[in-house]
Length: 246
Image 1 (tube, rainbow, N blue to C red):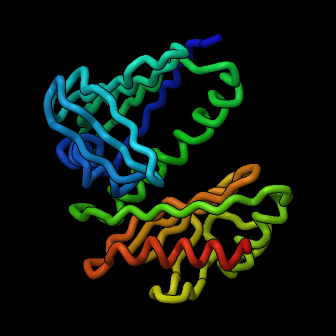
Image 2 (image 1 turned 45 degrees about the horizontal axis):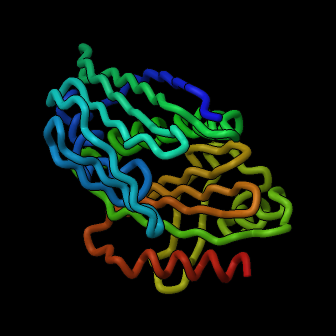
Image 3 (image 1 turned 30 degrees about the horizontal axis):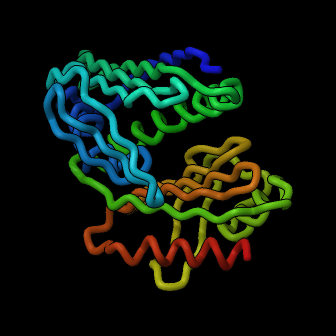
């Protein structure tokens, strides 16, 4: 049985409407703060594509008003499920922009758990967007994804292992310093900019790093801004995660 839902959020961003539009309505912009690798055909009737860990999701662009409004909707599945997103951009005085996000659709039988996960995730993603626009304006990132299953391992144990690998106190808090030396990658030196029961968000001089630890799995969504960063970084982070949790 499907269940309708709607999540609405608003945030003020330290950027012009043009900069915010580039971040939410272009593939390279979305790559720099959200999940996966993204492609956006910039027109009403075009397609928005997100590829994450080999999974490809497509949505129809139902509204495209440059600098103002972007809306997308996935096809309705055989079970009645679909997702719709709307982004509304409004400039404010003082080089700031208000972004309103509406995420709606139909969820499945486990709708309560799905809804709770979406509701918890959006504030983090908008915080990452704020970090991107505040600290990496005019730049775009290489998105990095890695995943490792943790069957039967308590979430708290996994969280402690991640904290230790990042030289963090446990529990970690915003402002804590981070240091790690992943094989085949530059040293990771930065600070925690987000910490909750499910994830750490870390900012360095050349990247935004997410370490998400849920029941049975660890996910990493990183955004790397260094100009010499290559695709090998994703394989290196996957090895780091496998070694940590192996």
